[in-house]
Length: 311
Image (tube, rainbow, N blue to C red; front, side):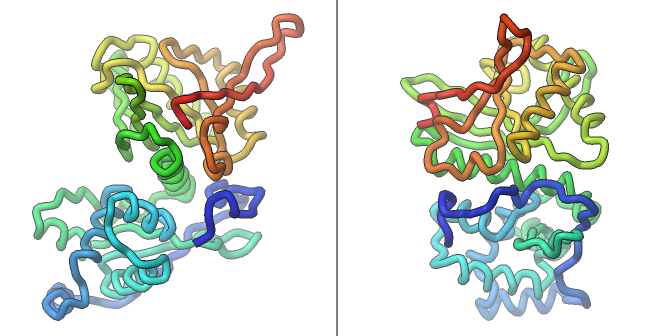
């Protein structure tokens, strides 16, 4: 498997492409639960397979590379990416999982996205593992899936590259008390150093059609949460640090402009920005940027942020 630092690309694989569609790449036909039980009895589907689709149940959508890296983090022995791909193929053939790829005028995407299928839910429920998957989950649009994948990548980057990593949450719930609404961010990691704990919440922004409208709506809820924060709101003893994960450097400027344009003010947190490709660096200590106002010109400029917590 290619190391992050050796991935040669200038465009994030999780960026939105014009005219992009999601294409089914699973298996048609019918597979009975009895056929699957027989495969389990013969050992063709074993505990490793269960751990794989339980992981996908947790994250909802994942690439095979993300699955492999997360299995390694959890201490689940998987010999190679190829070995994992063979097991994923088995799970797709038995309709425990299904998969999709993205295609546009630029061509077919280079990766596949794996998600749960009905048989997977049955098997997890048989082991009393909570699985809230519904068939409608698999018809989510491209931008929602790519936000999930970008969130996964951010979580994995912090797990693998910050020695202060403590734990993660896939879909942290943020309650906007005044409006009585809950939004789900795209990931959270907690870091600890010298007895202090801080959480980073990832808001992944993509350039889907009219993305500015949805972004404004979500920022209204974030503003409600941060500007009315008291201890242990949404379970946080202190406000989590909000990080906007954008498609590229230009997109960080576009996102920040929306914040200024809509007079969005978030108290109790700094506004940090990063990009998908910044997560590929060997060290994340310089992966964040912020925007500072030049008092002489009145214009904002991007400035690097160096956080020792991220070493």
